[in-house]
Amino acid sequence: AQSVTQPDIHITVSEGASLELRCNYSYGATPYLFWYVQSPGQGLQLLLKYFSGDTLVQGIKGFEAEFKRSQSSFNLRKPSVHWSDAAEYFCAVGARGGGNKLTFGTGTQLKVEL
Amino acid sequence: EPEVTQTPSHQVTQMGQEVILRCVPISNHLYFYWYRQILGQKVEFLVSFYNNEISEKSEIFDDQFSVERPDGSNFTLKIRSTKLEDSAMYFCASSEARTGGPYNSPLHFGNGTRLTVT
Figure (cartoon, rainbow over the protein chains, first blue to last red):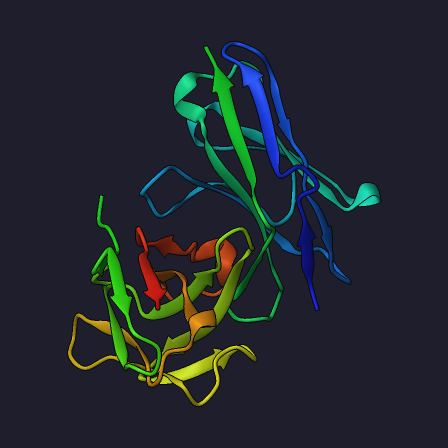
């Protein structure tokens, strides 16, 4: 069965600083990988996804993520964080041939200091 | 942009009571899901529903839970006799039914219903 680990529960960065949120997955083959964001009082919004091809994927709101098979990682990055990026970020994995079920990590709460 | 809507946003119920959480998926979507997030824990898959039947369910989704699509627009989750440990945020999601699984048919989530069992 697939699993996802997000080692950082909370991260605080200054506005304008760069950001990297870590995600490690466990799955026997190349999985579908996703990053979702949850702003306070809101649902989960898809930031970006990866299945195959170019290992650096671009998403909405200036986010990108890099798939590294050797490290089983799919870290989320943003070169310059805005105060509105403060939210909870979830990494998720979907299995090929496993229907549409997603397995989520525990999330990383991002705080942005002005 | 079309949205998944969930009602109510917050529900308080007493232990042992039945509760129904309601969702209106995006109109052209054919897959429907319930996920839940207990405070401080990860978002967990409960059930997926397609073509008027459950397509997959987790171990959490026991006999106390049921889902229904009572009409062409609503998708409901019923908890028959709530327990304290059912307190969580419940998310409804929907997706199209394309080949390629969740990559080609990303899940669209609602804002959630916070269920508090006292």
